[in-house]
Image 1 (spheres, rainbow, N blue to C red):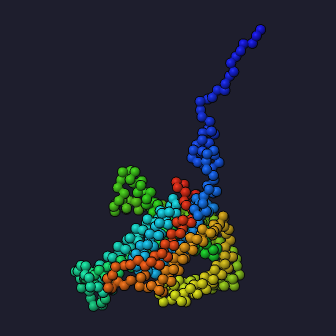
Image 2 (cartoon, rainbow, N blue to C red):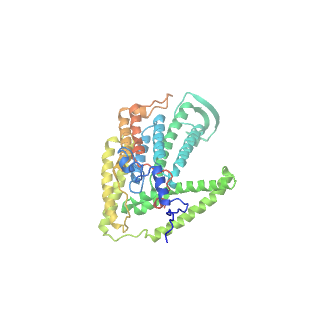
Image 3 (tube, rainbow, N blue to C red):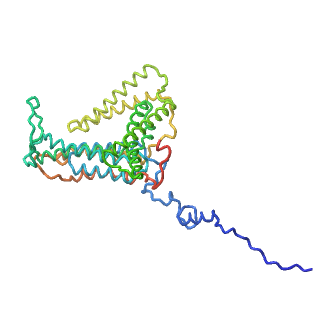
Amino acid sequence: MTALPFPRRTPRTSGRADPTAARRTADAAAGLPGTAGAPAAPGRARAWWRAPQAGRANAVHAGAWWVWALGLATAASRTTNMLLLALVVAVAGYVVAARRTDAPWARSYGAFLRLGLAVLVIRLVFAVLLGSPIPGTHVVVTLPQVPLPHWAQGVRIGGRVTAEGLVFALRDGMKLATLLVCVGAANALANPARLLKSLPGALYEAGVAVVVAMTFAPHLVADVARLRAARRLRGREDRGVRALLQVGLPVLEGALERSVALAAAMDARGYGRTAAVPAGVRRATAALTLGGLLGVCAGTYALLSASGGRYGLPVLLIGLAAAMAGLRLGGRRSVRTRYRPDRWGARAWLVAGSGAAVAALMIAATGYDPAALDPPAFPLTAPTLPLWPAASLLLGLLPAFVAPAPAVGRAPAKEDVR
């Protein structure tokens, strides 16, 4: 009996693609590292001068962003040249656009821009209605003047509106608006939760109050945007006074719920508990901290004023040293620990150093070219852009190239939105 020759069986397939092979093919097509036909790992192929992708480990310290923004604000406070003020706003806006994330607090920059514009308009309205202390010869319009009693001498309502007075009001309003824009840039780039973690132990209680106050505006802006989007989806009007009144109550309710949750979280984490320290240490801490902060305020005011540039820097340095010594001693009262503290790396030094360099160069420019930084409002002249002060302001663009680039489309980490 002979065996019949059966054909060799071939392995049958189920008709479904192998998920592992499909995933490898997709990874190779997307150019992911570790697959065939893919380039090398991003960390190896990236040039040294390019900023890496932002992450939890390489994020710029929140304090560095505030130092950078305060440097720009200091430079803006030293000039009334509208072209230089516009350049400060442009520098801050470019850095925010390049390094802003999708976190809720990063959306507050637009609100600060609108607030600055409102301040500018209000200042111009006051100049039109109440007049200006700057004399002028170019009359724009003459308003009906309201007669006032004799005890209100020096105050007028209506009258002549001159071009010199409007230019003076525009410069003052633009200066204040630029300061608000710098604060908004710091609010949009610095993580408030990480800023709280980086404060010294002696300022923990005060830091919590300040950070909660700073995060009120971003959360308020996010709530208003969310409620307006919900009204649009329901086919309701989201603009106007009536819509604003209907949105206000849910925003207030959300703020109250957030405050109750925050109070419960603070109480659960032992907020306000301190360790026992000797009375002498407490007195020395209070004296050093208070004296150091007074020295910092006096030195900062001297640097911002035109007449105190000589003694401002020594007083500021002495005040900083005393304040840091006091904070060091006061940290003994804190019984809390820090989980994964942020590091002040090389990129943080570059970000903070660019803001400090802008402020230092602008302060130095007031010594050799004061007329360019503070042009006279009378007689009426067109503003000019001084070369070296403008070049010093461009140093503020450095964070847009050295800070880690935010990941596009990546949701913020859970620890970043708390």
